[in-house]
Length: 279
Length: 66
Image (cartoon, rainbow over all chains, first blue to last red; front, side, top):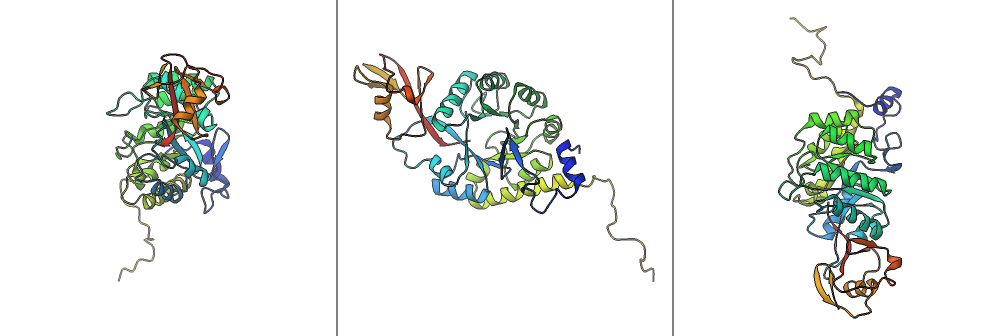
């Protein structure tokens, strides 16, 4: 497994790897902003605002997505109130957009409504797979970067597309593990590794996480963070699963920094052969 | 005159502005953004932006998602 330069430096100095992997020694930085958690949460799918709030707190997240939709006067309480109360940074998305034009307009509306130029850029191809449309995605990313947005694109697990998005000026790349809400985990770990190897911006594994081991694997593969929603909000006990994800992301990050042992074909004794009683 | 607000036809006074229609749709004063015929109208411009027959107004806010 090839590690990136920043991680190698942390390992060689030795002192940088401490008991708390998310402390000052290992900050998670996107576009110059430091976040105290490598777990980015979505808010869709929670049965109630109370359940959502409990889950967000248990997850330890510091950055959380919302969608932009037509106002509905019958809706009581706002997800924005929850995020404000918990001092969690809001990350608007462009979910539901099928074209670059729709996504750019949605991002501009989000900037106006929420006062942030950060956007999780999502341009999907069809409702059945919710897979990103790469042509529209690149078009929208270029327009938004030109308009001064901090663009975090939800992308296919395609190393070439990820590289193009970085070259355009995106602040991170967010490849899917598998389709949104599918819980199928990481279907192509090799591609995720390739994306991580070449990336000069943070890599966030976005979509497809089903359970804690999926999140840990993403971090072990070298991703800088994980973005998930459904795995927590539609779990039987959302707050408990949120805590599991928090631990998984931290465990996976620690394992990545620690450097795993190589896989071997045969056993390697962990107890010494010397001094074995032959009586 | 008739305009389209969030996809639904709505009868509004001849002197209607973006601000007056937004006020009809929601009591919220923050976290709201408006597009008039697919162009963002900044909040500072709402009161000075009159509506015309058949205009399409979208009034959006943040909801759970992603």
